Length: 90
Image (cartoon, rainbow, N blue to C red; front, side, top):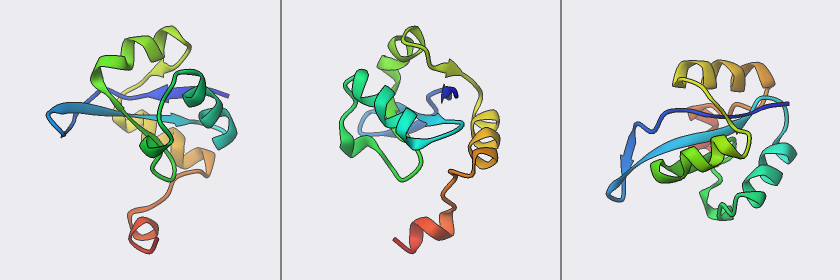
C-alpha cells in the first residue's frame, strides 16, 4: 500500500495543485489525509487535491512523489480510478 503525490501543475484559486492518491484502497488514503489535516472537502472521488505548499510535508509523512503519468497508471491499476464519464454522471 502506497500513498502517491504528483507534481503540482493545476492552477486554481491563485496557487498550483497536485493530487494525492492510494495505489490500493481509499481507507488508507483517507487515514493518511486525516493524519495530515487535509479537509474532507478536498477529496474528489478518487483523489485529494493538495496545494503545492504542503507537498514537502506529505512526502516527509510518507507519500511517494511520482509524475502525473505514473500516478494515473497506478490509480487505474488499483481499480480506484473514477473516469471523466463517471464524474459527469455524479
